[in-house]
Amino acid sequence: MKDLSESRVLIVDDVKANVDVLVQALRDDYRISVSLNGEAALRSVEKNPPDLVLLDIVMPGLDGYEVCRRLRAAAPTRELPVMFLSSLDEVQNKTLGFEVGGNDYLTKPFEVLEVKARVRSLLKAKAYSDAVKERLAAELRIAREIQLGILPSDVAARVRDTGLEICAILEAAREVGGDLYEVLRLVDGRVLVAVGDVSGKGIPAALFMAVTTTLLRTMAQQFCAPEEIIRRVNDVLALQNPRGMFVTLICLVVDPATGTVTCANAGHPPPVLLRPGAAPTPTLASTGTLIGILPGAEVGCESIVLQPGDALVVYTDGVTEAFDAAGNTFDEDLLQAYLAQAPRGSAAEIAQGVLGAVRRHAGEHPQSDDITIVTLCRLK
Image (spheres, one colour):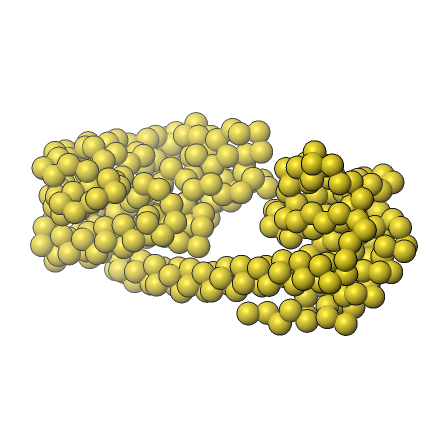
């Protein structure tokens, strides 16, 4: 945990006498910064973030209440401890102080010993909270490394000498997520490509994703038909699923010799077929329901033939449900419009192009869902 002597305390008060008393009381124990008004305080916090703000209320310009509101409205300072030091001692003043986000409220004139005790208490609580957050962040970083290690690291090697080209991109909305993809060479020489999306986000989705991926690989070693693979995965997941989670899963089995793609789609968005000289077209729509909920669920199967030069873009709904600042999604129409005008390239160029289009649409809006894009091209 952080040594409290390294903590920085920002004193915000327009009365020099008050500032002098607080500086004298705290300077031997902590690092001290001073601002004489609300605007200066906000600039100071942005430039040199403190660990605690001692905030007067009645000041020229922005009052302490408004300073606190703005601190709470900004993500970097949302949890920054704030203690009001004010001569306003009415209950409604104190109540408003807590309503705008203050952590403590001390009425002037104050006892120096009480100020020091409360400052130390708030700084200890922040140091403990920071230590817990850092430990959790470290564990999540490790979890992300493990989760990414579950996914195939070199999909190109798995389709070498098949006449196919595959690229896979996964970007989690959080440290860990629920999207998955798989590329396997089956015993009969065909290639399995699967993409899935677990309900929810975070650690529960990541655990369910790991189980689903493991089951998918196991069933693919025993069965070659995509509908049978999905049915088997579904039955095992549904047997022990106390939280009622589910997965959308699309499973494609490609015959490199003929270009025939056999597909079972359990509630997943349909891939987009790219064919030279033709408009991008959704294909291989859902032939079954979500998996993981009910054992014995039926999943159908359908086929298409990829011609040389064709490509399939398989994705999760993190692509078409990406929001911009106005709340508009990068929906299926925008995806197809982008693909219609984008220059045709390699599997990697197609996937990176889609991801770039999604990012440009979202702008500064934070990513709300995991994004997975897998492109499959038939070269010959």
